[in-house]
Image (cartoon, rainbow, N blue to C red; front, side, top):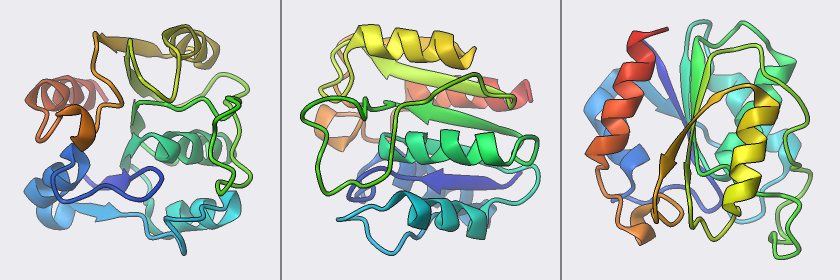
Amino acid sequence: MHFVIAPGYLDSDEGHWQTLWQQQWGEQAVRTSPSSWLEPEFDDWQDALDAVVEPGSVIVAHSLGCLATLAWLSRHPGVAAGAFLVAVPDAGRADFPETIRGFSRPSGPVADPVLMVGSTDDPYADWSFTQQTAALLGVRLIEVANGGHLSTASGRGPWPEGRAVFDEFVAGL
């Protein structure tokens, strides 16, 4: 299996579960490489996915990488085997960073298999937004109570619970 790591704004640090999983997968995994992690531009992030997604890839996205992945899936239905979306942010919030350009909320269902994981207290997405987004997309949502942004800062580290959910998702593809 081929895994594509799609980090969020500022990339995922060395202690982030995405980075740790990528290290475990070795050559089976590749990370997107947009031109800028600091001033993300939508088209650039789409190009970064274009450069690494192969037919049958599983995209493992976090935060802003989820918005990029959802847009990419809508433009390329059936190419990826599926996507694991963690901590989808709300691009419509008043406090969404101004340095992020062109990203928007998801607008409709996805055709590809997707599993979404969200936290009840994510600082970048109210729980109601997360639930509504999963319903809009027509995907299964896994709830993590009080998990913050499901990142290094919120104590995830290698995140074995997330890995178990991910492995189950992949086994069903």
